[in-house]
Image (cartoon, rainbow, N blue to C red; front, side, top):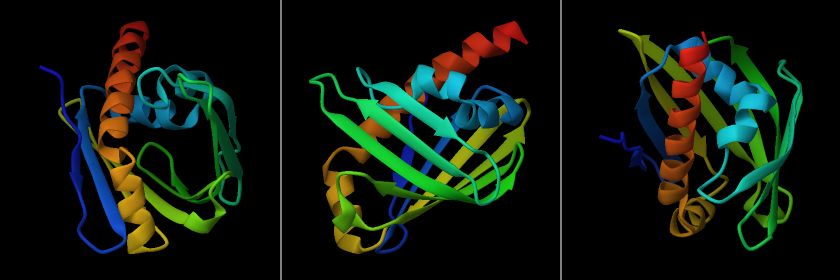
Length: 161
């Protein structure tokens, strides 16, 4: 059985994504922060992560450039605000081709129980309108496809450790 991502909208601006991965949280943290692992799973099915720059420190910047199956390029960037290795990442996120969306705040938390990790990502959008546009554009299906790919990377990496 494939795990599914739980998506909720607890406030007018927030989306919360939750999924349980069958992997220890340190491995999940690595997959969220190491370019060599991110390039293997980030983005929905058919997308590739062509640029993956990560300066993993408070105040450090990150930038991703994804290519969609039709060739369209989507760039995202932000700054790390808080990092608790293996447990928590807080960062900003903005889109290179959609300035009007403003900046989002992403809070990712990892909790391990019995060798499984609960991943919870709270995304706080600049407005309800932006949140709703992103939801209608396929946030739920995109997250599901990305996390399915992440699950496969975690399985492969668990076998190597």
